Image: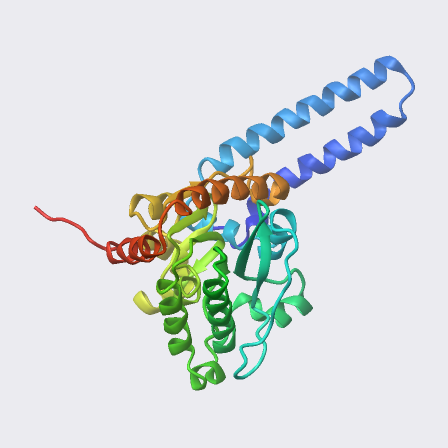
Length: 324
C-alpha cells in the first residue's frame, strides 16, 4: 500500500527525466540522422508517459485519491486566486482575538465583478506549513470568515470559497476559544447570506473544518479531491484501533469525488488535467474559472430570498434516502 503519491509516480518521474535528457542531447546534436534517432526515442518516451498516466490515473483507489488530494505540488487557494481572481486584497484578523493564516480572505474581482473570496491555504515548505498551521483553521479563522461573509452581504458581493483542509485545528487552545461554536457560527452566517455562494473543494475536504466555509448554493469538487467527515487514519484508529487500516477506512468513507456526486453532496465534479491538477495548474484554474462562471450566471438570476431558500433546502436534503 502506497504512503505517498510519489511512490506510484516515481517511474513516471524517471521517464520524464529521461525525456529532458534526450531533448538536451537532441538540441546539441548536429548529425541529422542521430538527431532524428533521438527525436524518435523522445516520441517513444512521451508515448510511454501518456500510457502510464492514462492507466494509473483511471484506476486510482480511494486511498490513492486521498494521497493525491494531499500531494504537495497541487495548486492551493492562493494559486487559483492569483490566476483567476485579479485585484485580490487580503484582509486579516477576526476583530476579537487575532489573526489566523490558515484561512485567506478578502475582496477580489471575478469576470470584472467584485466578489468576496475565502479559502484554506496550505504551505509549500516546513516554514510556511507552520505559519499556515497546515490549513487547520482556529476559531479566529472562522470568525474572520464570518466577518468577510457579513461584508459580502453588506456590499452585495457574491462569495467564492476554496476548501482544502484536513480538519479544523484540534488543539486545546482552539477548544478553549470555542472552535465548535466558531464553525457552527460560520455555517449559520453562510446560510443567512442572500448573495450567490459557490464553494469548491480543491484538495482535502476534511470534517467540520471543511464544511465551515462550504455552505454554498453550488458546491463543486475537483476530480481528485476528497470530502469526508474524518481523515481515513482517524477513522481506522476509532473503528478498528489500527491506523494502518487507513485504506480500508478510505473505501468505507466514500470520500472520492465520484461518491460525493453520487450522494448529491456536490453539484459537479470539475475534470482535472491529464494526470492531475499538479501537472497543469493553469489548465486546472481555467476549468475552475469556467465552472464558477457557469454557476454564477445561473445564481445571479435568482432573487435574494430565493438564493437563501435554495441554499437551505440544498443542505436539508442531504442524507435523505428511501427504503423498500
